[in-house]
Picture 1 (cartoon, rainbow, N blue to C red):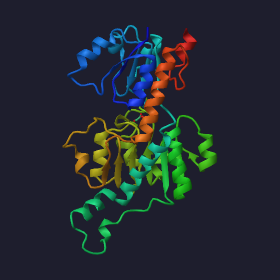
Picture 2: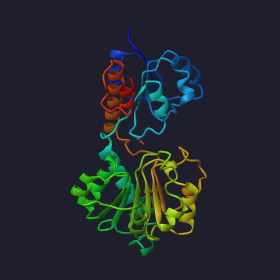
Picture 3: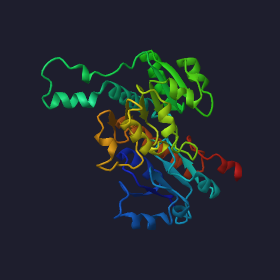
Length: 326
Ligand code: GLV
């Protein structure tokens, strides 16, 4: 008998077909209030779960006694209670590395769009305000040869550093739990304390995973440490920032602007103060959202799922402790 899995996110047909070769699949393109009850019933005898964003916590796991693997279609896994999964011997996997370039492109694009005011200028052209050479009030600021401070120098952070150093002649500062020697060697990245990074950077780019240690890492004190001319770019998770403090820092002109791909609440509410600020550029959490990369991520997640159910070690296993405990 094939193992039973639930795929609760829309995935390309070829990914679904690959999983169906090995598993009986219950497929929801997305979880909604309407299908939640049916999902919970299916969960009772499911062996695998694949998707992203769903909070896989103690309460959910109590309803999934046969689960062997949770495969996240994302690099971030703050939606998974890893301690609970490990305690129950359930493997957890994610999709690192294959999204580094695409996400670094998005975040660097966001940084450029914010510094050079692309969305505002796009509206200026499209609404017929472009009557002659552009007034100084609409100029942006240079990105090249400036200082970029990257908080969280993992795979994506280092790929941003590569663009900054090799493409834009920027000085790269970084703050991380551990030293990233490859980034230091290849991109001349300099490790520094958070305070120093905030004080010296023209662009502060937050790429750290969301953990209890990084929640609200950027708050009132941190924004105050930034230069008034500096921009804040967030490509990590909304909750790594105290959003009220960010609004205040922007309102009080403690920083020059912000480029945000992530928010505390997603989708962000219509009347959120960030949405009416001209110096804030927003994206709907699309770091890795290209056709190619999302296909690769779904396929990797599917391979992780199938490998785990075949008793093999998935290539991107998060909780190795499951094996050492057994
Ligand atoms: C996206 O945010 C991811 O974690 O892959």
